[in-house]
Image 1 (cartoon, rainbow, N blue to C red):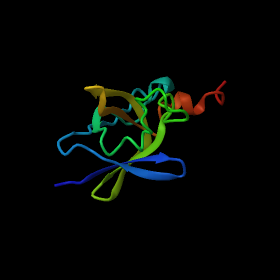
Image 2 (cartoon, rainbow, N blue to C red):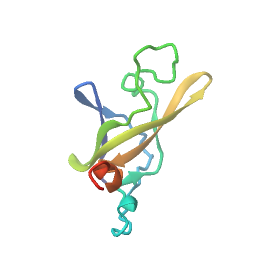
Image 3 (tube, rainbow, N blue to C red):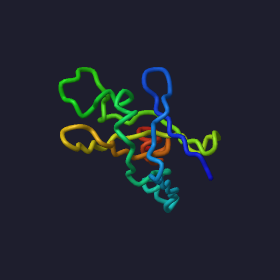
Image 4 (cartoon, rainbow, N blue to C red):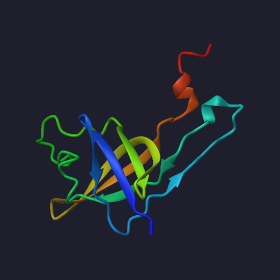
Length: 128
């Protein structure tokens, strides 16, 4: 059985994200038509869930709008995925939403993106 680890950078350190035992993180690698530089994409995952319990401190109680200077979901945070303690993918993690049950956070919805969103983004401003 493969052990999956998900880590997100908060401040200057990476913190391990607590995962559900049965949640799957499916990463898709995509390489499009190389002749059109705007269509070459990187790895990404389907949106997946992580439990709120154990992750509220990492996401700085994002669901609570009274918290100042909390987790900024408008920006993707540096992250990486490990398989059996070996780096599998390095990239960014996007906090999509939070599900509440009885007005308490139940789960966060996340999406993982590889470091390179598209070659067009990387070379933006360099091409004429």
